[in-house]
Length: 147
Image (cartoon, rainbow, N blue to C red; front, top):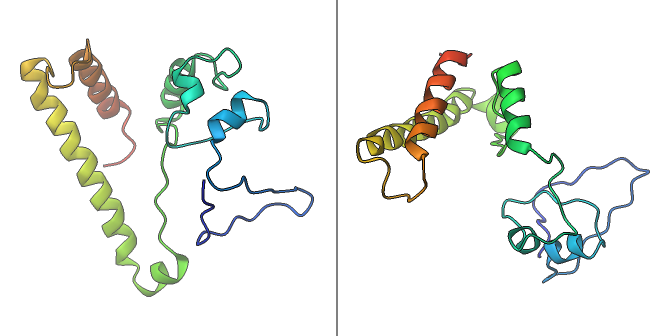
C-alpha cells in the first residue's frame, strides 16, 4: 500500500513508526501477527474469510455502538471531513457550506431509503432493511441534537 504523503502523520517522539512496503497486504500482516491492529476503510480479506487469528476490538461492536449513541446522541465516528484552518479563517462560510453539503447528502440517502420502504427495499436484498431503516430514522429524530 502506497503511503499517503500529503497528510502529516504526527506522533509522539518516543513512538517508532515504520511504513509498510508498497504492495503490502495489511490484512495479511494482521492475520500473521506482524501488526497488532488495523483501522481501514475496507474490511480486510482475513476478516471476510473469518480467520480465527483476527477479531473485532469489540466483539459485539453493533451493541457497543448503539450504547454509545444512546448515551451521547452521537453516532460513532466512521469518517472525518476536514477544512484546513487557513481556508476556514479566510472563508468561514466554507465550513458551514461543507457541513450543509454532507448533511444534505445524508438526508437525500435517508429519503431514498424511506421511499424504498414502499417496496420493502427489494433493490438491496437485505432482509429486514426497511425495519432497520425505520428504527434508525425514528431513533435519530428522537435523539437528534442538531436542528
